[in-house]
Length: 123
Image 1 (spheres, rainbow, N blue to C red):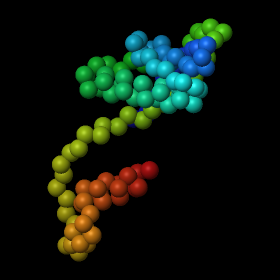
Image 2: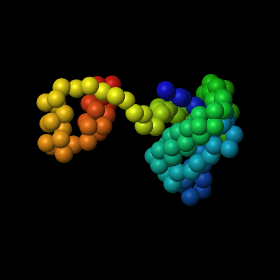
Image 3: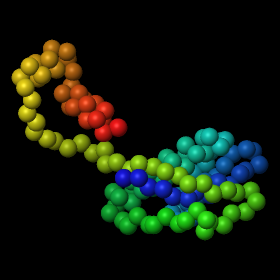
Image 4: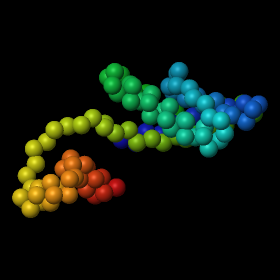
């Protein structure tokens, strides 16, 4: 599921940035430069929302970026993440014998082959 939240980037005197999320109190990160700060903002948002999901807490609604107030040393930017449940599940599958034999001959993991094939189909 995609989530988009406004983040506030505060520039520091050493060229680094502190990132906060007005809708997620306590969700804070830092980046040594702008590019790194954007990466860190995505990582922080992802981890914060994953935590909320794992604790079965309500994910707050995101504010409109136009409603975010910033100072002269700050700017607001939208940060987007795709939150996916990466936990493994067991499934029973049927496939032709020749496919199963080919997987065994090649020394492949059937789970990995299926995951790769599905990922290719959905992306």
